[in-house]
Image (cartoon, rainbow, N blue to C red; front, side):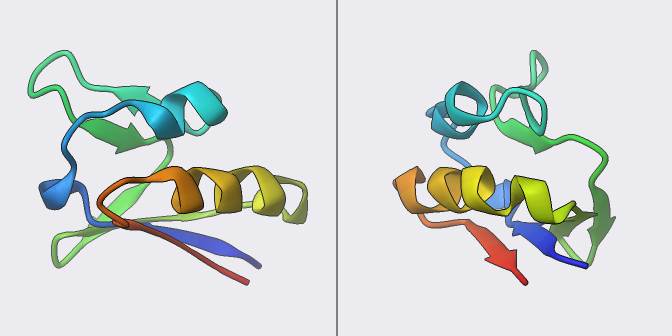
Length: 74
């Protein structure tokens, strides 16, 4: 199964990932950073298993991220 890795601590809150795929990304009202929906934190990196149908749209989000903290594996 494909997976997304998100280094949330380095997020600058530009919101581009949310604009590209709002079903997988949210902007936190608490700190202004983006949050990976259904993500689980492991050693400072948030991870979520995604379907094959989400691969292309999340690759677009990863490519658009100005600080390159999103990685799609699979």
